[in-house]
Amino acid sequence: MTNTSSSGEMVYVKHTKDINGFPKVILREVRGCSAELSRACCSCRPNCTFLCLEFSLLEQVYLYGAQVTSWKNEHGEELLFLSSKAIFKPPKAIRGGIPICFPQFGNHGSLEQHGFARNRTWTVDPDPPPFATISHNKAFIDLILKPSEEDAKIWPHRYEFRLRITLGPGGDLMLTSRIRNTNIDGKSFTFTFAYHTYFSVTDISEVRVEGLETLDYLDNLKNRERVTEQGDAITFESEVDKTYLSTPTKIAIIDHERKRTFVLRKDGLPDAVVWNPWDKKAKAIPDFGDDEYKHMLCVEAACVETPITLKPGEEWKGRQELSAVPSSYCSGQLDPQVVLQSG
Image 1 (spheres, rainbow, N blue to C red):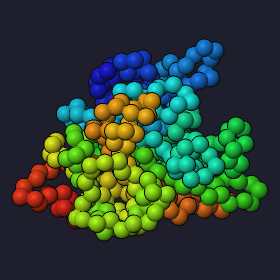
Image 2 (spheres, one colour):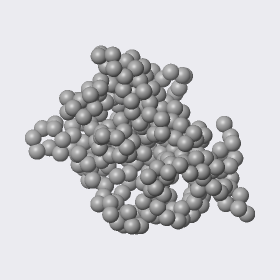
Image 3 (cartoon, one colour):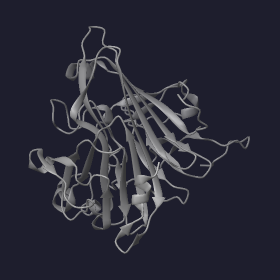
Image 4 (spheres, rainbow, N blue to C red):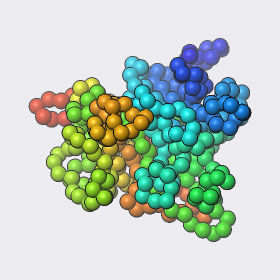
């Protein structure tokens, strides 16, 4: 795939296929950073598992889960984790990248694990609204999810979920969700939400998370027992599944081995989930490699403890921005503190 069209113009949004023939939309910006979204369709025609038509020829495409599966920097280095055993076939959710958890996070409710948005087909908005603020971003795509008759049987509400995925000129990856209650029966609805981001790390035992220290969290390994975090940072030596509460708008994930820091900025999402299955649970997950827990960490911008309630006509907005910056470790002091304190 090239960066330019036949006329020599930069192509910011392009449809292509991965090495397995799986169609995806590529967002590309001039520095070479790219983000990829996997696409699948289980009903486009008989005996067809994936949608194989050219993106440029369609007004709408089906995007499976509206899920970012790859985010690379200008050096071509992968920044998101995707399991080598990930299943790219509906109705299975894709293991890795950034699954969208809606309208339920986890199994705390009557719906399937993490809700249904991550294993439904989304449509592309061919005429998306302009950015609310002045922006020169061209590498973006707007996706829409609306209720189907099947979904209405398990979650009887009308809604419109708009997701804008943007790759900034500096390589930052931004996801902005807008969920509107379109019920005509006057009923409100309630939901929980998360960007289930899988970060790629070199060695989980050499990773620190900063910005969540001294906060309360719900320990999901102990029936959501409420605990206060101790220590000056979060490190990993066993299974972790925690929902941190009333978290700051910026969180740093420091990968010592790679000398890289991920900075997660968020708005409208007060909680942050930190998850790594470790060895025993990794072996029990069919679409997850036995040793892959060593090379991933989920830090998820979320709204879990206090569900969001929308009256008809009301809209909720939740935004996540990811960036990757160089970092170093010297005499026990971490440069990412500067990143956290900066604007």
